[in-house]
Amino acid sequence: MTFDLRQFAATVRVTDGVYGTELQRQRLLAGGCPELLNDTDPEIVEAIARSYVEAGSDVILTNSLSAHRFGLAPHGAERRAAELAEAAAAISRRAARGTDVKVFGSFGPTGKVVMLEEVSRDALASAFAETAEALAWGGAEAIVLETFNELAEVRIALEAVQAACDLPVVVSMTFSSGPDQTMTMMGETPAKLAAMAGACGADAVGANCGIGPEAALRVVRLLAEATDLPVWVKPNAGLPVVADGRTTFDMPPEKFAAFVPDFIGAGASFVGGGCGTTPDHVRAIRRQVDRLPAGAKERQP
Image (cartoon, rainbow, N blue to C red; front, side, top):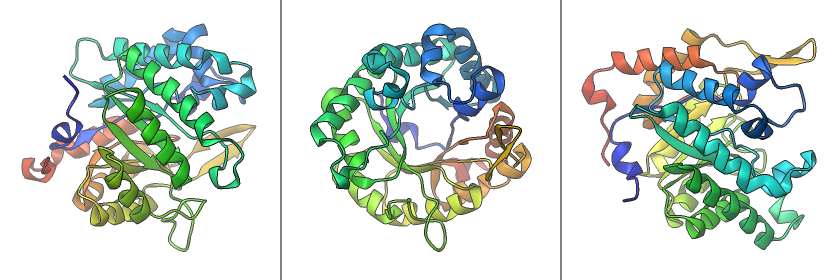
């Protein structure tokens, strides 16, 4: 039986942080490929996933943001997309074993611009379908399309996932441009995303990464005004700071989590963190959610 994401979202859910910055902090060299660690060092990936489970996540994602042919090509691993995506889902499933935590398989954009015809739509759809099918084989219970900037590309991804498997789909874009930072770098708006997601049968809609929780809060409000789909939000821990060749984010857990009641009040059903967030950030989010009155955490499925 297919997982009912909308029913699951009837109660506010805490998601996780990210793999990329945690892997960079612990093991991955700058410019390295996080997805290859699903094969060469699955224990460290599983440890990060488990750290989010232990921090109080209701949902954890998979180490597969670029686990498609286009994302792996710079590392000479484009033919390993299915293998690495399936491994990512299996790793997160192991981390969640013995708990009620759900595993959502995720992947992001290709870096190609659809409107410029840098690559054919069929090639994109084929790559996305391959990854989605592999995540499903690995045990993912839903798919999250995240960090997209172009509506045309994320629509291709959504339709490819729907053709490849019967898992529910969250469609999330990165909003950090425009006068109030509520547009993507390609000029897409929350309202456009919401309209496309509703018309094409997505199960939830959201925003991730960006420039921090304050701007993300504005986006959540706009998404909630534009759709009755569950709203997903995972903002970065502020802006990146580069020092000694390493990228860090300077928003501490409690300051980040202070936005959680506002996110929920604005209509968010899923709250987690993007780049720079750690298990400590998730722990702080969990505390904020648990402090809320029961009624504030209930949503209409």
